[in-house]
Length: 324
Image (tube, rainbow, N blue to C red; front, side, top):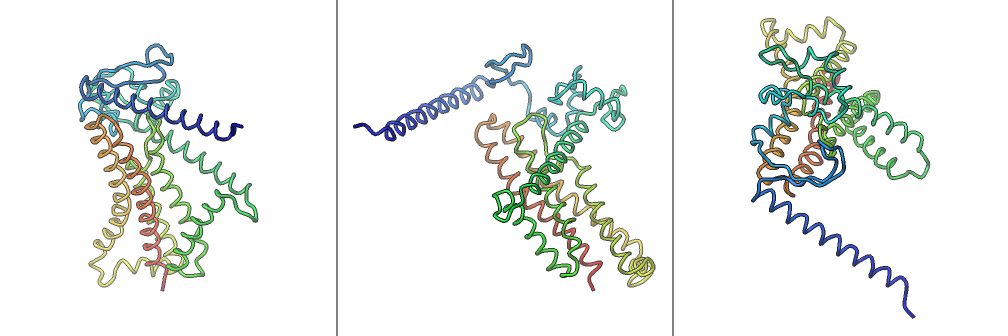
């Protein structure tokens, strides 16, 4: 008598073997097209016909063009005299046109006064998506709280208690009010850095844009001095800039401003640099295998480290001002 379970296992192993052979053939074909014919193989919605198909695209762009399109799409549009810049938003043309009219004054400008807001549009779109996702995630975790925690609840509690232990150890057990603030900073930066893993054209890490790290840095330093004024009083706080002598006030002010530069540019530089390295290596290897590992490293590992470093620096700045 034949065992049905063994038959099922044999069928599944045959399917897996066939799928692996298909992937290997596809990889070899793509490797040959990319390195020897200078063409990329695409599968999906054709940009001209709008139908799902398989087609070849001749690669004519240089590495500099690829970096410019990824990092400075507005400059790429102007330098190449592209008439339809909205194609590089990889989204709704009507939404981009509305955004460009509303916020076009903040975009890049060429010699003829024409404006382009592709980079700003990508940033705002990603921030809105990220905020909506975090709100829905918080509501879901809150709704699914139970005595026997689920995997999502367990991971959330571990992350929360990890930051909580750091805050209470550095600031003191009576400063628990700051725990939600630092947890929010860490979660926002971490998810911002991890958004680079999404295989969607036009989606990039918000922290790759200098405006986001600088805004976070200004907020962190502002929270530090606001709480310093609450604890010391306005006069004692202002007096601290005159120590040890009055003539050092400019240097002390520059030192406080340098905190914003240090904490924000460290985050920006690591994320931005990782993006450029990924584009350069992807161009050299024709986007085959290696970029996947690089992307995983710069998003999962480096992104987590930078979220932790930013949180620890903000926590240290606050500790120096409000702790006795």
